[in-house]
Figure (spheres, helix red, strand yellow):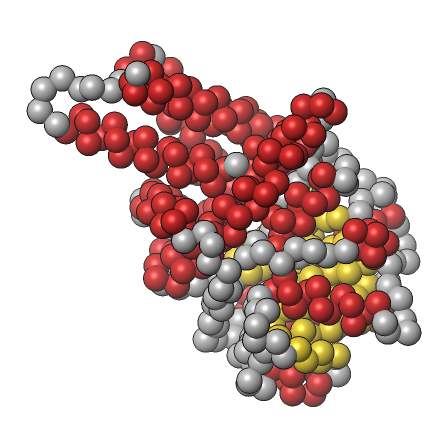
Amino acid sequence: MLDHFLLGVQIILAVIGAYQLFLTFFGWFRRKSAAQHAPQKSFAILVAAHNEEQVVGALIDNLKNLDYPKELYDVFVICDNCDDSTADIARSKGVYACERNNPALRGKGYAIEWMLKQLWQMPRSYDAIVMFDADNLVNPDYLKHMNNDLCNGSRVIQAYLDTKNPHDSWITSAYAVTYWYCNRLWQLPRQNLGLANFLGGTGMCFETKLLKEIGWGATSLVEDLEFTMRCVQRGVNPTFNYDAKVYDEKPLTFKASARQRLRWMQGHFDVARRYFFPLFWQGLTERSWSKIDTAVYALNVYNVLIASLVSIILWVDMMMPGDAMFKSLFYYAPNLFMVVAILSYIQFPIALIIERANWRTYLYLVTFPVFMLSWWPITVYAFFTQNNKQWSHTEHTRVIRLEEMQSKQVS
């Protein structure tokens, strides 16, 4: 009985994996750019910051020099429970420093919800709201792309997420590989197919009218995923702009990375538990591929959890003396699953080739499987600690400016 159960679980996981592998082929091409428009949309740029005096200045300088009419955007730094010089730096650079002090409700989701309420009370109104993290950098043409997408009918837009420091360590390189893969073979296929894209926590743009209609309401540890679910439930599919580039700083050490990813997985379990079944059922009754696809994405954290546990059971069973009690799908079709396994791995170097990654990144493909396998214990631990709502801060210790980063990319 248990053997049949494990086999059934493997089949379900294999079908989900094959589905995702199928979608990647739609990321091999890019559709022609949509219609271009003269700058007309106004933007409120929100920068979420908690004790970010080390990096916030570089981002503010970056944002003040965007290639977009200065009268059409303002920058607001959300100084959330800060006890350093973040607010002073923001004010000294001529942008709005909005200070929030609420130790009981910590985290970016709560900070954004508070800031939006402040924004709605201000005399000036904006067509759209853009959100960045304090450690980000952004290409100068970012707002031009957001303006075009809004004029073309998008209501929620996710930019292309890249890393500021891909070659600092094997950990940052692993993040970079993951980002390039997700941009090209996860987000772009869904954009090409008209499915919903997934918000990535930064580089996000929202139509103001939509935010006022449905409210923010995303205060979990993964506010980006939660708001994605809320949008798709209402028939609003977030879109992806491949040309709008945002650069995020990644932690240097495995310990810091594990802490960050644990928070993501804890929040992901929370969102999956609340949104999967309603959204999946809604997708079935409405025959909406987009809603079903988004619901399956919400379930990914359980897929990782179950796949890791099943793999451990099968490995332990194989190492025990005597005949194996359980059989893997590989036993029934070894050639097929060998091909699938190879295709699943080479997606990552293929993404590097398509995205024209620096040659140094390929060297880290040797350690990349270790990074991927480390998701297993992190996800298992997150499952048993998913009721933790404590937001954890990723510290930044150095300044990287856009010019410095671009010069390194060229070299």
